[in-house]
Length: 596
Image: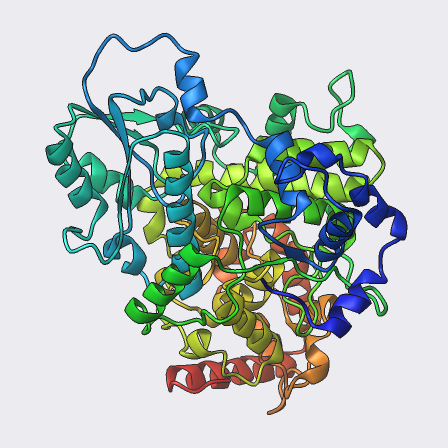
């Protein structure tokens, strides 16, 4: 069990009132693990550990979750249905990002005739050099999910990575198990990767495909919404999802607060004296320890450290992390979701994106919880709306664009970029403090929040003219929550604007002044953010103007770039020349393999 350092724990405990801990101490005694009344000491220990950011596998809190939230077992659901007439053995494939009991392809199972198959394969773990923590999360969560299915009476065939019979690929394992089980029908839920889905379809097996109902908007629904539109805009799609879900709407269908979007209230920098919650962490059980050892041995050449692995790998732990954020993080998320701070990788972010993307949490329940937090007065509207917008707005939108435009979407390169990804993206060894901070925490935790990805590492890649395919591979490899359906549109479209503005209306480019405004990174930097053309000037400044100048023909036509180009045109010619020269010098250093 992980326990925070005493001083950090004590500091964190002082942030919250005794009344909150008291509420936890009031949990009913009948939810105790042994079926007996828990002692006051046991409940106090549960409250203390949860306040300190620790979740244990034996506390009353976990039992409260299991009793109140756990859904009926699959066997119970099966027995409540009319028995299937056919006795044909069917095989149900569950992928590593589909670990949900509500998965569409599991809903028509029969416990006597069907088998669930989960497989760990080298092809998926290494088609890009995935962060070791990402591989460990998926493998451990898969093994825990298989165990949970077996405990519910489901027949499971689980293939570990080191199984000598493992064919090494999802299609290979499907073919192998179809033959071994003599299955005449295979059930598969839509994949999150076009490449993988195509390879499964090419198997030639009798597969029945199921729509992924974990999402609010189906592929077909998004395609129908996009039909006839020359340009798509997330804001209009988001409003449709609000109407569809009924979230944060008044009785007459208008948005609560009089506006659909409160993004302007989500952009505060972190002021002095505001402390973020201590991050909730989870200890590794025997299954996870086995996986960590396997990953350390088989993926030692992948970038990133395993040492800081502390992510939830079960539904119960993921739910605990979510409830912890609801209590202590969501209120601050509204104001400070765009903020960045030195040696503070998480701030007021939930860290649930990986758990959500692999099926350990339910989108609709999360959104309902956030809405309830607003209606009960626990959080402000800018926090609730901002969080819901990220989920049913942006997350659903990028998935829709991905499936609407693949496979051609992946080859987009509007600016004709040809510069390779600098080596320091894989090491964090750069004098630019903002880049060092964002990349360093990514290597350590397989995590960075959206502004660090968009306006630091992504912004630099855009300004430097990095090949879109290479920066897309980096994001897919390095981040715990990155799967092709969500990573590719975010990186190629939002970060690199390589799709020509299909996903977003303008490039998200900025000078060092934005980073200075939203973080404290510039204070500890070797470069001066107040300078643009000197040898010690912040590289973002000259590269920003160099980017605008070299792509002037393309970008001046964009109405949203008009003000920026007016500022450039007002600039004296000698200043423009100096910025161009500084930009050329920096790009030449990158071409020579130097770390800025």
